[in-house]
Length: 538
Image (cartoon, rainbow, N blue to C red; front, side, top):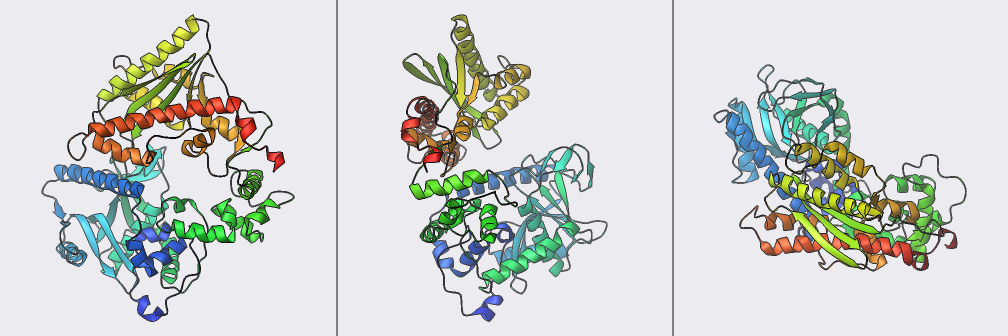
C-alpha cells in the first residue's frame, strides 16, 4: 500500500525533524504508510486491530520466551535480564548500565531512543564480544532464517563461535537485515558496537544463530533510513499504490477508496507490475484494458495477458473469466475431499474428510486435541491414512474409480510427507514412499490448480474468494486461516482451560472447507460455463 487521498503535509518540518523516530520495521514497510503512521498517530491509535497481526505477535512472543528459557537454563548465572517492567527510558538506562558493567549476555535490551538520528529499537539479546570489545546484537524471530544447503555462517546457540555451516544456506529476510543494522548503528552511537560488524538472528527452529555480515548490509540500511525519515517528516511526497502489505494495513480502507476513485492500475496489477506500467504511461485500469501489442519487456512476473483480462473483468464487474469455452475437472465414482489444519509449524492437528459415494456425503475428522507438537499427532495421522487407504482399496475392489481432492495442495503435501517422516515406525504410519506414490498419482487432484488453469481470477484464487461464486458459504462469518489459529489456542487451552466450543467451531470450519471443494468441483462440471463469461466475450 502506498496511501490515500491528498493529505495535508505538516507545516512544522524543523521541529518535526528532531521528533520523528522510526523502528527498523519502517524500513521494509510501504513508504506512504510510513508517512501516515508518523503524521496521523491519532487515527492510527483508533484503527481496528488486525486479528492476524495480533496472533502473529502472540506467537512471536511465545517463541521468544521459549528461546529465553532454553538459553537461561543452559547458563543460569550467565545472563543479565532487563525486566520488561518500567518505562522504555528506564529499561534503556538499565541496558546501558549493564553494557558498561561488562555483562556477557543481556536479554531484553532496550537501546535509548535517539531523536537526532531518528532511531528507536530493541534487541532480544546483546552478546559481549570478548575478543574485540563491544556488543553483538542478536534478534529472535518467529520465521525461518536458514534452509537446508550450505554456505551460511552460523554459531551454536549457547556459545558465540561463528563458522561456515555446510548444512545450511541463508534464507534471505530483508526485514531481519534492516533490524540488525538498525541495532548496530544504535550501539555505535554509544560506542558499544563490536568492531567485528556482525549480528545474529535466532529463527523459528531455535537451533542455531545465523550470523549476518553487516558490511554487506549497512549501505542499503543507511539509504533506506534516510529515505523513510524524509518521508515521515513530510518532505518527500508519496502516492497510493496497492501492494501485498495492503491486506493487513490499518490504512487500507482509506487507500482503497482513493485508488478506486482514480481507477488506479495497481488495483488490477499490484506491486512492481504497477510500477512497470506507470513507466509506460499506463496509470489507470482503462489504460491497461486498452493495451494492444506485445507485453512490456520488463514485466516482472505472472502473465501479462492475464493482467489485461483482469483489467477488462474489473470494468465489466466479472468475478471470474473463463480461459476456454469448456470447463473440465477430473471426476470419479468415489470422491473424497480433504482439508488439513495445522498450527504454525508445530504440527497438523486435524485431517478433515468428506466421503462422497453416490448421493450421500459424510464428513469425518481425524483430530488430536493435545497441543501440537504431540505424539498423539502420529495416532490421528495414522487413522486418517488408514481410512483413506481403505476407501481407495474398496473402490478398486468394486471396480469403481477413486479421487481425493484438496484446494492448493502444497500445505497438504507438506504435512503428508512431514508426518510420514517424523512418525516413521509408529503404528499405522505409512512409509514415505507410499505417501509419495499417492501424491504423485492421478487420484490426488488439486482443485486450486484446476481453477488456475481454466479461469482468470480478478479478485484472487483463494477458496474463500472462489467458492462463493459457486454458491458456497461458510457458517462462521469469521472463518479463515488466521482466525482458526486463535480458535485453536483456545480449543487446546494454551492460555487456560480447553474450550470445547472452539473445538466445535474448528470442526465446522474444516467441514465447510471440504464441502467448499465439493461444491466448486460440481459447479465447474455443471454450471460454470453458464455463469462465467468467456475471455473473448469481454
